Length: 589
Image (cartoon, one colour):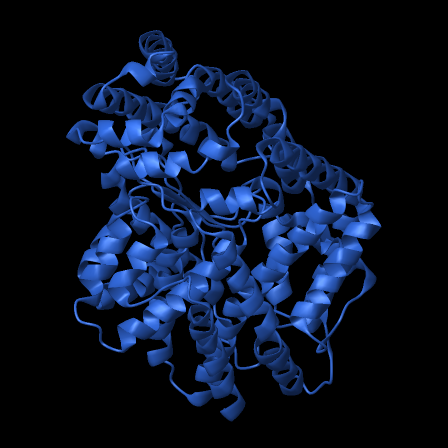
């Protein structure tokens, strides 16, 4: 029980397994291994000979096995996330991952053999309802067909993953989790020191920024090695698979065309001056200066609501906002509270940031937060709950088709944030509070859109430059500084230690080129919210249908009922104009 924040919930991982050494986990690992052996014995080398009904039955068995291995893997990941500094948890997670990799290697043949089928042959088989049901999964599997390697190579890559990319990712996670940042009389972990950067006290912000930059700089050799190794690893695999660009594999996985992502990135970069540059110039004026140090980027305004919000109030605020939009949506949201589905305290060793882990359709999602009672933390709860609700609603599509492409995976989360923000804005008691709230929202949107596209730009430059040879820490720092100056504009000054700030961003390591999905989601939700405000009939029902679709439909189909099309270049400007409209309002206030 936290005296200020209230009783913060923690996960009930026994919903998955009794304990890391429990007989139920051991039983399921054995069961998964036996089922994988039996599956390979039944189907390896025989997929082409199956009729539609037989292939449908095989995919149903593969799906059930995916649900089982997904449950095991989720448990290991979540148990590790609770304390990544604990070597016993790290070892447990690694051992489970290695066992699952061994199981998965027995199943690699199945996707490969399906992709060897000719289009006409597969289309004929799909006339059988047993196989037609899996049409969307087959459609998304087939996009990898031109990039598929030989069976032996695919199997080797699968088996080596656990000591390759996954091991480097683990090194990054454990390094960042173990780092401690000296601050006055304390030593803080990463979420705690970054939280100080939004303090009302400028001296606290400066000290925190300097400490963070120094510790990252002291460890920059490790972060640079990890980044260089993974960028080279990606370049080698991309070359073998014949991907046109470093971004192409992620876009293919997101079921979005390179041109659509290019249009988004171009639109945001063209809007830097009217969004970030204009807003931060305005913020500098409010602070009575021409330029601000970089640590004032997220500095709250003097009118900012800096009270500590206890957990029960945060829960009520978010659920009330969801309920005002749709009681059905709020009903799903309520399932997360008081049930062990959320882990909220900011505890030592815990995974930094926040996430919603979908686990598998036969279970339920788990949300991780580092809740410290700020208004931003309430917004993070609204965001992650959106993901969680989306995952619950999409679970009906089954283990193979519940996952939403990343381009639409941020839709429910950002929409949930917008609902919560608009609800809080309506209840603002005066103009000063309204101004502070609008400024906070604009900053969140700039962090989601401008900052993430700047991250995407940084990655693009790093991966292209890495093709010419290994990048020194200074070279990485120079690319970072160039991108930050372009995106944030002339209102900021950057001290030398800021060049190390790229090194803590986990997305660069875990999922290269993922970051544009945030900007995609934000711009999409801005357009979607404008449609909602315009009074489109049955909007709530259409919105819930979109969430329930999971990965069954692509972005064009999902957005059509709302009259939106992400492949239209004007679409992005529509979303960006919502942010620019908020800045207009702030200029008037």
